[in-house]
Length: 335
Image 1: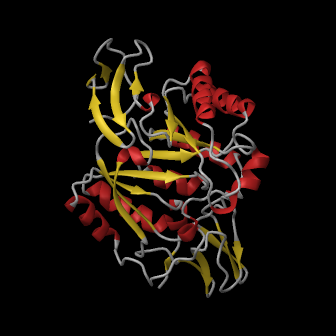
Image 2 (image 1 turned 180 degrees about the vertical axis):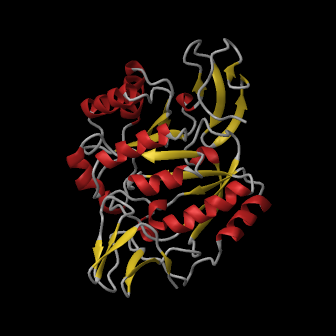
Image 3 (image 1 turned 90 degrees about the horizontal axis):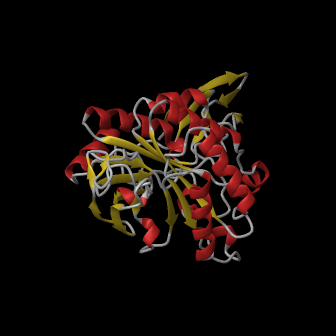
């Protein structure tokens, strides 16, 4: 089953996809890099609609979003397919496969929203694979979710063109963006995409007042250069992201990087300290459950204002959005 795709134009007998910067030009019956978009008789269609393969009820902290509705539940789902080719992909068995209605749930957008509400979720998260690859399904679900009073969350690498991103921003409330590395050459080798479009996405999300948190996975020998981390943090502060939570996530061997060792805990801790020294106010160690720095601290008085243990929310010490101890306004969405 296929569904009409958005953002494309005809080019003779081919079609040119305008959803992401790959800009795939597809001959009849050809599919794009994402596996989800195909030229059917001169029309671009998506194969990723109404056929999710992963559905879970997650704590919002798992996205990770630490300063957006802490302690709430989010209804998470994904189809197969992805427009990246990450050597370290944890979900490669679904991201690097074409969508199919076999072994998939059959759920229209309205059914997803209904299920999320029945499970008392505050939000729907478009996650696991990159939701750019199932754009139409995500956007139509987000529209219905917004009408029902639910929040919408994207977990994405942010590799999308400006026009569809602006449409996304009409319905999305929060995003965790994977900023893979602040080096274009490594970006291409590790993930098969370029850095600049991701930075453009971050700027557009910020301009659209979407709540943003950023994940930077530190892979030994690939993305753990402290000079590169420093450049990234300087760019973030210089471009108005000092109050954007930054998660330095620990790598574990997987997929095509099984010969790379796990990230030393000391590397994560040093990266966190470097980011704070440069001026980022909220920095977290990722994939280190129980680490003391996993809590949220007030940037001014340094008191612990949100307590958590891994993905388990414990307590919050805020009066509205202000630190209970010193009154400083804490960035985030807490109600």
